[in-house]
Every structure is written in structure tokens, then in C-alpha cells.
Length: 107
Image 1 (cartoon, helix red, strand yellow):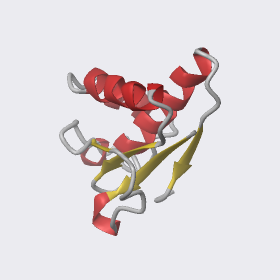
Image 2 (cartoon, one colour):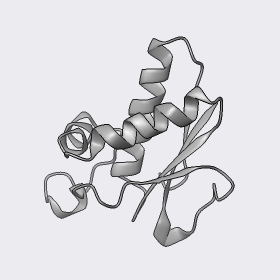
Image 3 (cartoon, one colour):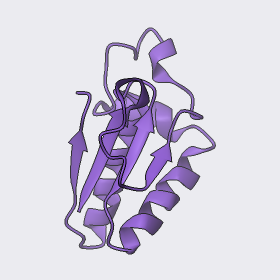
Image 4 (cartoon, one colour):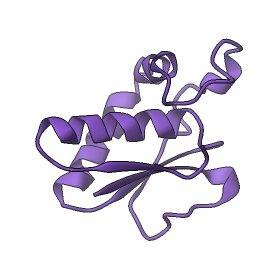
């Protein structure tokens, strides 16, 4: 299973997959301490996870994965929110024995 992350401003490379839109979550790009980092960084992951909409997006990703389908997370630039959610979904799937890999299209 592949969990994609991408930036809508560059186009959607995973158009045939279910796409979960992360653009409603708070954007780490606007925090000077986080702007230069990516969703691979623990500080960015914590920032994104602290948004009230995060749990619903992660649950939606888990639901798609439970159907055995690849899924894509998209945010504006594809460096922070979508990456953090893709990484978290891969980790959650690993805990239940599902082999998944993250493919980050904008890193």
C-alpha cells in the first residue's frame, strides 16, 4: 500500500486515488520556526496533530486503507501537513500489521 503526499499547487499526481484535503488544517508554513522544516520533522508533526481537524483526516485515511486502497493527502505546498499525515498513517498501519510506504511528491 502506498500513502501519497503532494501539493495542490503543483497538480495532483495521485488523481485516480481517494484524496484527503489537508488545506483546512493550520499551516506550519506561517510559523517562522517551522517554515524551513518538513512534515518529516517531529515539531511539524506535533503542530499538525494539534489541529482539531487532524483526527478526522487520519480516520478517513485509515478507512480508505481498510478497504485495501492507496490514499493521497494533499495540502497547498506538499511539504508540511500532507507529509505529516502520510507519515502518521503509515505508522498507524504498521502497528496493525499492514505494510505501507509513504511517497512524498514534493520533498
